[in-house]
Length: 300
Image (cartoon, rainbow, N blue to C red; front, side, top):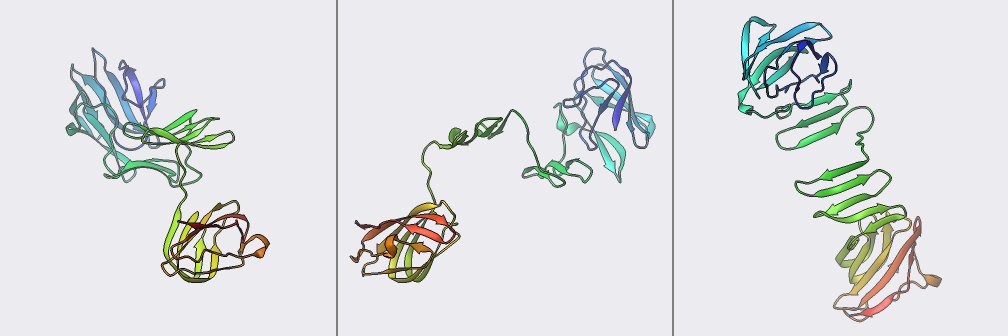
């Protein structure tokens, strides 16, 4: 739909609406607001539904502080709108059929939408923008992907930067407005410390499986002999450590599943002293191949 001008002496349009020669384009929905009227400016306009050529409203006159509007549905009734009043267009059963003001909004300038009223774009539609009363949404629901473009795209908090994305440059993530992680031409820079997740399990005996997708490092207290230390979801290139802690009894042993390999197939020989801590480094070199380094014995 478009607002077409028969005599346009009104030079200032509402925020976000652009005058293009003799017409401006509005997205179907609600929220067109008249900005402040100044001097002797006024406009004579006809709002039409271009698909049905249906005349909706004529703005005919203005005084110093009001705009007089005549609706096509009430051609004999003129309604006055003060500067800043919101004039909303509603769609009912696919037909643009209502024009009214909302004086509770006050004199703010802009387009206003009620909660859960959606701006929808695309034939499907494919994109929605709305607020549901609790949260705000920009959602791709149709064909293709949601793409945000710009030479630099910033994600902002209420008073700080959360992330920046620079064209041909770094992607930077912030904590409390301080850059912590940034991509580089060669990889990644971490400012501060990178802490891998660690499984601290205080009861281990019998068959014990280490899930390498869930944790990077493992601290295992031996409360009995581990008869089979198995592995799942290991990823090539993953590395870390496994710490074995003897309980108060001590002399606990660990037997390895075939996924684990030790130098010269020596297996693991741990400290037998009660409460002793042994540290074993590891690296995953292939599917089901976890190489264990030489145990560092008797910490603590």
